[in-house]
Length: 144
Image (cartoon, rainbow, N blue to C red):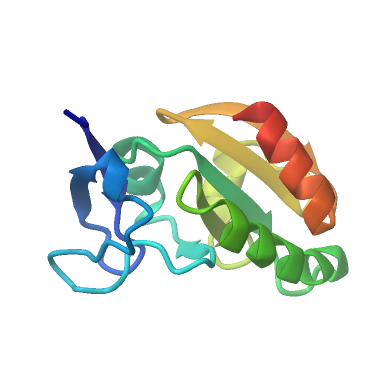
């Protein structure tokens, strides 16, 4: 029997438990009915950051970025392409450090873009600087 996996909905922040073998079956949130995985990063804020960090069983990849950052903007399509490729193995998220500085300060983000990978609420990898989709995929496959 397949044990349940907890996933946090990217729309309503509800914690959803579903069988692990159903992750690739386009599951929907039972509360808001949006898809749990849409092949694109979810937007995190100071309010919902900890919920996504600690309540999901999936590794969480967070792109700390800002709208004025050229390398952040250049990397964004590669990050989204990687999300399309690797979800639902990983959960992809973005945090705008200009609008939400507290989580960035908490994790000592000194340059952007910086990517952090978390498992069970703990940081397991960090990479600063923009990457293309191939480099990003290689890096993520090496750490999870």
